[in-house]
Amino acid sequence: MKERVRTPQTCPKCGQAYTERPAYSRVDGSPICPDCGTREALESIGVSVEEQDKILGIIHEQYKPE
Image (cartoon, rainbow, N blue to C red; front, side, top):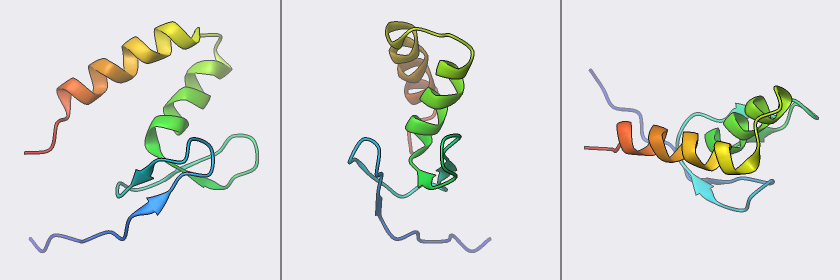
């Protein structure tokens, strides 16, 4: 299968560069990095910032690029 090379983009929320498929903001529909998309989703159900950090840490640990 052909690997698609993605152009790095900068997230307007956090300023980080990312190459993954973007998430879309729940606020205004603009493309944002996957981490900010996850944070917005977790925030919408009342998850604290500290717990969001733990969850994102687990996600990053499980899905390290090979």
